Amino acid sequence: MFVDHIKVHAHAGKGGDGSVHFYRGKFQPKGGPDGGDGGRGGSIILLVDNSTDSLKTFFFNAKLHAADGDPGGGNQRFGKSASDVVYKVPPGTLISRWTEEEDPETGEIDVVLEPVVDLTKVGEQFILCQGGKGGKGNVHFKSATHQAPREFTPGTPGEDGDFYFELRSIADAGFVGFPNAGKSTLMSKLSAARPKIASYPFTTLQPMVGVMEFNPIRRATIADIPGIIEGAHANIGLGHQFLRHIMRCRLLMFVVDTAGSEARDPITDLETLRTEISLYSDELAKRPWCILANKMDLPGSEENLALIKDRFKRVKILPISADSGLGMDKLHKFLDQKIGHNTE
Ligand SMILES: Nc1nc2c(ncn2[C@@H]2O[C@H](COP(=O)(O)OP(=O)(O)OP(=O)(O)O)[C@@H](O)[C@H]2O)c(=O)[nH]1
Ligand SMILES: [Mg+2]
Image (cartoon, rainbow, N blue to C red; front, side, top):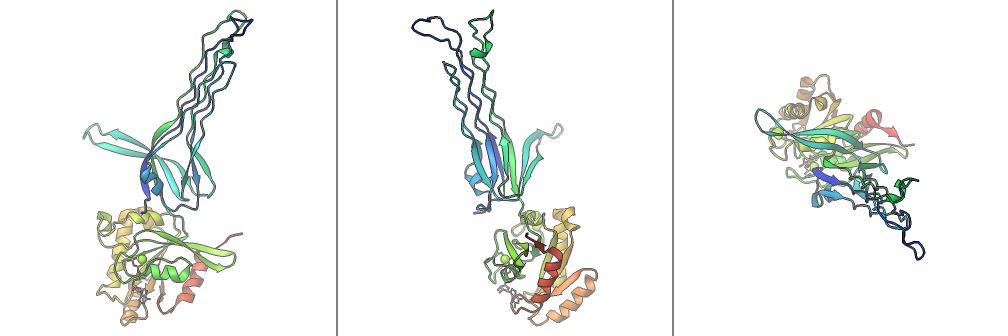
């Protein structure tokens, strides 16, 4: 199961109340105030962790909460603070605050998302909801003229709210293509990732990020996503929601079956893909892109390649065959130059 966006409710713990208490000793039946302070409420903390690649845990548990702090006690005892609760999220998780507003005219409920934090670095921690502070016990309210104070302060409430967690994978470049164009085959040839490859459409059902190594210290990451078809913006096929996973890519690689082996026209395919990208996001449509003219080992591909070059004159086009290896050296060099970066 793959979950890449979800609404979550979070509620940190309340601080414990301060105590009202008076010392009672054998020889001091009316001792002074000795009520201690309440403990802190637990906070809800998000930790960016590489061992998780989806937001699945929140699907099963969409209500996050931490315990309340204990109240203070006599003899100036502090109440016990509650433990913070740490939830793991994958790198690339964008957190927004979710509020609902009623449209005064239509009466419809609009969801307003306000960005809170973008969690990208492994090991990074973020306090989503801060636990409440403990209240003060009556020992603090004693003075020369006020010997038996009954005042105390209550613990403050923990922060709470509704949030929207959205995973946008982090990769330098991403594939965009119709089903069966050969995206996953390319991914498996370029990186150590082992995506599922098959001759039926929609083999890939969830995004995957692979690492390309140009040399021991130089690398780049690439994202494979499910195929896009005409009408994806209207949720046809798997829809275009997986495009969220290439929103952070610097380079979009449009993969096309150049031979049109399934009785499709590669130029129409490319035009459709460009349209679907624009319908998803203007920003994504402006991103640098190139064409990977795949399946050049099949008959008819040379003729179609000439037509593609004619139609997309200003776009970088790389003729390749992920199957036979044709053009893969050039693709490697191109990607090294465009998206490769040193790790140290
Ligand atoms: N002849 C030939 N076949 C290829 C080439 N690249 C991929 N294929 C085949 O095309 C079919 C689809 O390949 P995939 O890599 O699964 O395609 P995909 O684009 O990931 O497809 P989806 O995940 O369904 O979107 C498989 O049968 C591959 O073996 C190529 O260069 N030449
Ligand atoms: Mg695939």
